[in-house]
Length: 485
Image 1 (cartoon, rainbow, N blue to C red):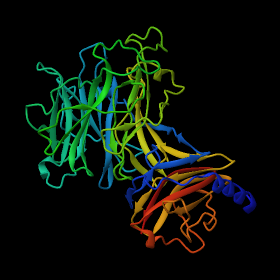
Image 2: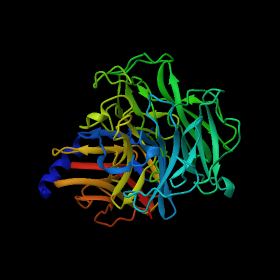
Image 3: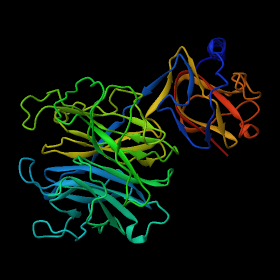
């Protein structure tokens, strides 16, 4: 561990170099909500530190194609915690891609998010038997995306809802579905809820608990902007994109509008896997499958050119998304069967499967005999960190208003790394006794550590006032912070 003299030198350099944040910056009311550094929205000053994207770790296969009705595909999974268990719904394909396909929706559940079972439900007949886990199967409808409706006025008969794409004679539309239990489904009505195609990948809908409305993120098209690296304009309508619509009753929807990502080069986005990140109120995360359709890493692949990876977008309003990183969140990796078109999709859902573990899921090997859904893991809030090198650096937040009495941090340091926190006024002056030099040296690896000063940890007298936080760090990563009682 660094000596006290070394830490003092680093902190003294930070003190000498950091200008005060402009008092004119409007304060951000963070309340007692957890704050992640997935974008620059909370950052006023950075010196010697940078934002780092962290890729999840590939784990075991969660859903394999081990039944006849799944032989040619398992994908487009939606998963969430429901009471004392995790539940999942996923697409399954019973015929090859070059034949008329029988596509259904299957169901699985788990106690730990790691080991999944496929119960025999006795609902849908396949090959003369109902001993399977199918909950829906119609040749003219596919890609169901269920969710549990958190709307307090939703009826028990419609506690679970879903969207599904119709491929019938009327063209591609999006239909609504309802269920009392997530197992027995029916169409909400014959008429579609959204009618502006295309809808030919995984369209996502959910009840937004913060905005108090239903939200849908669908496949779409974008026709403007500069193409990104590895992109081509062979897609006749433009660039594959993501659109958004909202509804108060799940029946009448606003017109679909494209999401925005600032001035970054545009890229083909297939699936979107959008979720409200429930550990941080007001934060929406999206994991599009980025399709580089001009590349041909598998020459002669019979379904055409292209290769996929997965990227990370974040938003504070669900409409304007930040491309903090153009780099991939999940790469195809060493598996050669992930190096062809549409072979890698992020599935929809983030599960907390341990005190220090989030589980996500990705489809791999699409169109191959070994197609499967794999579990990925990440530390809680661990998508992006503020990283300081050994030489040290610091970050100052925008002006904040908070609720609570203590400050807690999600962080990791090396054996010699550390960081300290200071509370400042709007002129950048330390507020005693919460100064940098009075802060207890923080080191280790913890998802929720209380910050303490010589006088203690009680920040209650500052609650509701406008302050700034200053993090002075060395060989450390800071993922998130929150105020609490």
